[in-house]
Image 1 (cartoon, one colour):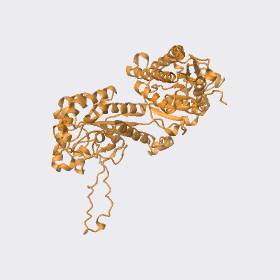
Image 2: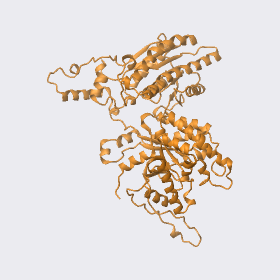
Image 3: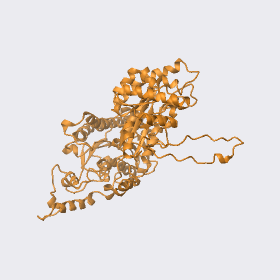
Image 4: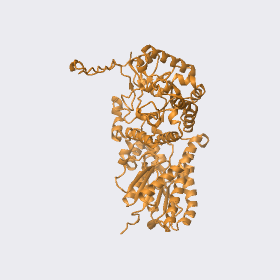
Length: 628
């Protein structure tokens, strides 16, 4: 015997499934016995959803037709034909409030690209998949239904957020009423409806209603029920509209789930709080604050601090120099050098174009050997003109072990001279070619006023001061040498001084060249690793670092006591370095993967920020000031 809604066994596709409403929708439909495919731009943490074979997750961008088509295809392959679409994904920027005449064009386009284009593409490919199944079987799909997430801002408008409100209005009143007349030509019982939530207690509005005055004027004073909705309130309405058994004669409708929000103030403070003419402002605020417990649970008030994740995207413009220093070999020939010319003539312009597309050209750091600066002046100027940081990377990509101390000093001073001539200021950053850095290198960098190095990996995601200690000596295991001579710990590093370099960690596993570039003379390079493997590895590293600390640990670290004591501050924040090379990432089959990775990182919203190495090092050193 089926339940009242009769949804058992149907396949439901939910977009925006990592968010507050979306994740609750996944749980709701699973509880109704449905098979669910959960889709989001962000990876969906397994810990947030119940473990069950009825749940399948996919990651993709609804505004990309190829991406959403692929995700729906994956869902059909895994769970079979999709009966119900919950088109829930949507974005809004609550960090700013612009009147229409000041809305940045990129904000308008970003919001419409996701909310309107993305919803259209999702519905399009959901219905194409349904059509394909019905054509192959000769039968209509059961319970074909679409529920779109609108918003009460689409009904009343929202000052400061016209880009969001106007788009939602288009979805819930324009799109569904047009589509309702079309889908019945595909499937005689197919339906489409929308839900329009008001304020909902989700992370999307995190902090927005923490101020009692804001809570009152934005939510409670306009809602007769004087409370904001929980995600459960919204998704149960979705489940009702998705059910042919319960809502089979409802289509083209937009159901408000808002406590009957009004477009005007309904409740005056005096009517609810007190009729006494002697009520003070302090009394009113106390009463308003007490009412918060009705609307927002305590765990919503005490939120984990928002992350501050810095993406350190860098490019090593080695070009031909890569075959002259650390890559020198007697077998190197014109074909090898040719890939270096490709790096300058093709790879650099492609990467600059990609960074411009993502609006991050001035938020990346290029590590350029002196040889590349002088051999490719046109491309180097293009890099400088992009506003990116210019840092040093040797002259001819020389490794520390290849040079005397004097040669290395000459190289560093020449690199400083070249970089200063290009930008008008001394370079602040150094990456040792092939990460071959010596204690002497550090000393000369400090003498030349460098701020940071990025050649070491004492940590994988946090800055630190470069340790100052004597060189580690190899052990002599000769038979005549006593073991007592080597059974000693390493000496402790000297305390840092004001000149000590900041280390921004490097990592072999976060760069493109080693696995994806064929270099005949390099034994650990073969170049035939699928880009999907590298993309997956990079994303896996980010996800681990993001989840390394629980919300409880971060909340504790962000508490007032912890801040006073200075312990735990920044728990959950991290650096995420990526090292690209124009000869590798400039290749036609690789640059698309880099594009996807940048999009994926940006999909984490305002918790991530693309940063120049110099800015990160300066900020960190300022917070960790030390004396001489």
